[in-house]
Amino acid sequence: MKKLVFIVTMIALCITVWAQAQPRKDELAKKENQSVNIQKADNTKKGNTRDCNPITTFPWSESFENLDGNMPECWTQEFLTDNEMTWRNLEGAPDNVWPMAAQSGSYRAVMITLPNQEAKTKLITPRLDLSELTNPRLRFWHAHYWDYLRVYYRTSSNGDWILLDEYITGGTFNYTQRTFLLPNPSDDYYIAFEGETRGTTGRGLNIDNVEVDDFVGYVDAELVNIIAPVAGIYQNLNDPVPITLSIRNNGSEALSNFNIKVEVNGVEVIDETFSGEPIPALSQAEERTITGTLDLSAEGAHVITITLVTAEEDQVPTNNTRSVTVTNNVCTPVTTFPYTENFDDGTTFPPRCWSITHVDGTRWGRNTNPNYSPPAAAIGRNQTTNTISLLVTPQIAIPSTGTFLLEFMSQFIQEVNYDGINRFAEVMI
Ligand SMILES: [Ca+2]
Ligand SMILES: [Ca+2]
Ligand SMILES: [Ca+2]
Image 1 (cartoon, rainbow, N blue to C red):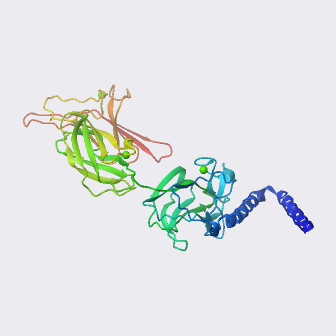
Image 2: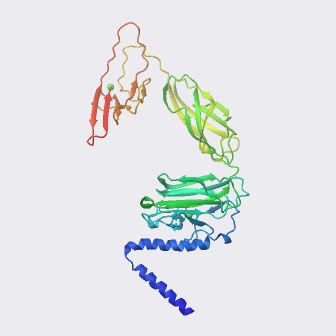
């Protein structure tokens, strides 16, 4: 018997030596196939769920570290294409993988094919018993270029996979963390990361730091953006100015118990209890217009600072406040003549009480080229053909008697660049 084992070993060694002596062009493919076979065998052994108890202790996480390059126990893989390509536990960047490292630590799960190969494989977590959790939350990091990633869950080992999210537009070039509340928790729950490699341009799919925990008692209201008022210079803001906010609830429970505090130049002008529909837990940003409005009719710059103040302590108070500056010019009609604007004062453009209407993309600006009306002129420049923009004077109260003359200096410059595609036209006043 010992002799037989020896002979078999010698034959295996000979095959290995022969394989190593093959031409270089076959080597990469062979290496890949070998590692696939090893992983398949490994998965069969380690992915055998008969020996795997469900995960019942949370937070639960998988960092893919300290596994001697094996995939973690009780994770399984499901091949969806004839090209059975496994997810592997990789360090560094073999096979041209991008990114070239793990998200943290040294290892992550990677699915990559050789150039011109396409494959689809699900990497499936061990069985998770979520029955004791109030708000089971999934977090994971992923990165991939061109290849596709889809994330699924199922609520029993023979249930249908249900799509949680997909990342299929160009890729996620740098590691990005995703967070989800897991729907329909059960005691036989699985999450699948489905990689789809897409031939020559893809550089592999990377997953790291998969975490499932019970997301409870967490408060984080975020003021994502002040949608209105929009920062800028306005004229004669005499009407009440509405406030529209983009609010995201990063917390674990629906958010309704908070106040919106508004200051203008450091003076509180609104402290309103939120009265709209509650914003769901872990929501997308939602747009809400509050009841209070602003009086910005006074002349000058108004720094508007808005803060969300939650009833329970906010875990991330740094994202609760945003500011926007709205400058109001109180403009009265021009009544003194002659009236002149030479665009030479460089402090603001357009000059006070002038306005610009971007009808179709032309940009008006001030230019100090000495060839123009020294030392500066208003320049309207378009970079595509046939665009229109209006540079508008202040309101002029022309008396009903007398004769009033409009005079302006202008120059039209047109350049067509050598490839004949873009046209740069300038109008100078
Ligand atoms: Ca890791
Ligand atoms: Ca917050
Ligand atoms: Ca001038």
